[in-house]
Amino acid sequence: MHPLADEKRDAMCGRVRLSSAVSEIKLVFSIPAHRPTPNFAPSWNAAPTDQLPIVRFDARAGERSLDLARWGLVPFWAKDLKVGFANINAKAEGIENRPAFREAFQRRRCLVPVDNFTSGRRPRPGRNPTPSRLPTAG
Image 1: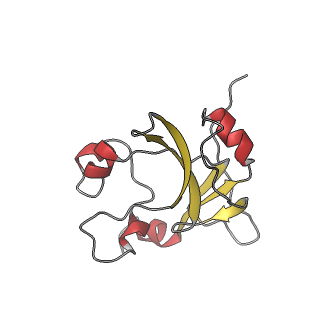
Image 2: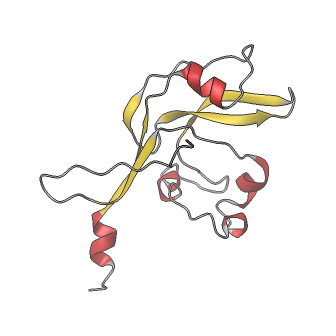
């Protein structure tokens, strides 16, 4: 058996927590007050294919917007939506050259505002997954 086989088998799919208020998200990302606000509930265990808020630039209006989108990237050439599962944990290095990401990277970037994420190996029995988050300033 390959030495990484156990690691791959034990890999836990990504999960995120989003508990910030929509007003806080709009403020942090400078979303104009007149922009429509999507209705979404807090989630402490959002999974790939769940609807999550995204921040993107609306080129027609010349400003940022807050919208809902399904978490995952399904390339335009994919015949099955399940391809989106395989594309949630891509490394940033070289992403602009990978066929699954190239067109989206060039034309349809967005930010997914989450409070923290959980990924990696499954915890041992009796332990909970450890959430990760980026450090905050100050």
